[in-house]
Image (cartoon, rainbow, N blue to C red):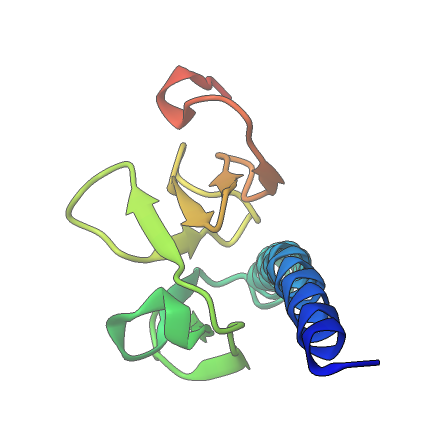
Length: 146
């Protein structure tokens, strides 16, 4: 093999390697979205369970006022943290229905006060309904009636 053949082979390998990196990035982002969805589901289940067991209101609030830092589940009255969830390195945006709040409140009967808002991360939208349950949404959250 001469120098030209070797340089062409290296160039072809570099192009194939770049294509592989791009496809792995999208797989990684999909995996992170799935982990965040699972963490949000677990958080809601835990918060609803604790609200009913303790017969107290529970609040899910962002850690350090940023949802991408994770979130805390705490008693509404005492503000004592029951459990903390740490997020994947991905931007998470909570869009509340009422602009005045940045928390999710679960009442002592396990329900929430109507449409709380939705989370956006990656290409995923996770909606929280009045039953205190969450789900993946493919339509505009303003068009959903629970």
